[in-house]
Image 1 (cartoon, one colour):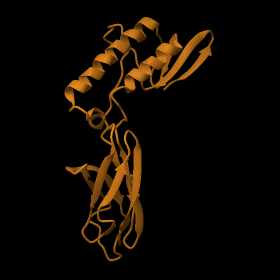
Image 2 (cartoon, helix red, strand yellow):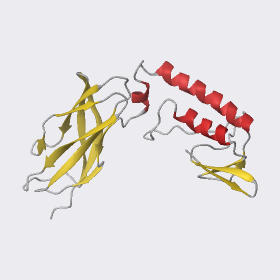
Image 3 (tube, one colour):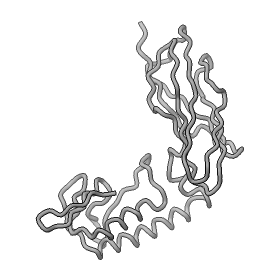
Image 4 (tube, one colour):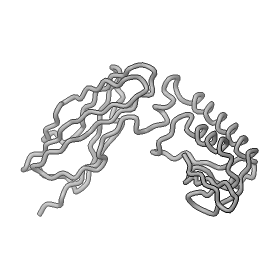
Length: 210
């Protein structure tokens, strides 16, 4: 995604942190793959194709000075991204590429939860299914044993290539003593009957007790 504008005769693409000048001077643009950012196997290809179609003459990145760009550099970058995409398919298991690239395909929301003894809070489980077939998910929270979690096991049916979400309830006894002001809880996950373990987490923040 980018914002395109014409300024003083220059076709300018505002690309955020997607592209930068390449210090290798190899005729391509530099890009980033950052853990925890949402990336699918074709994300970078979509980005560069968007630039090629709009043919900017200047890129204004999120950091640093604007720099000139031409179609040859963008097309060379596209070829580099096609090789990168193939690396993803070569490295990750068949059918699991986007699951492997997205550490948050299953997540707890909100990630940071303000919770005090005696309180009850909803916690949403969000799931992205990259498979071309439906997927069954079972989630159990790993939390202090004194808490009440409802349901014990949350079951979610996720249609093919889509997202689903469902809600659990967390209740903390009024007399419960927190081990600290911040600590993690985890989601123990099964997918289509296969145990995946504690693959995502949330942070509980408790008020300091006198």
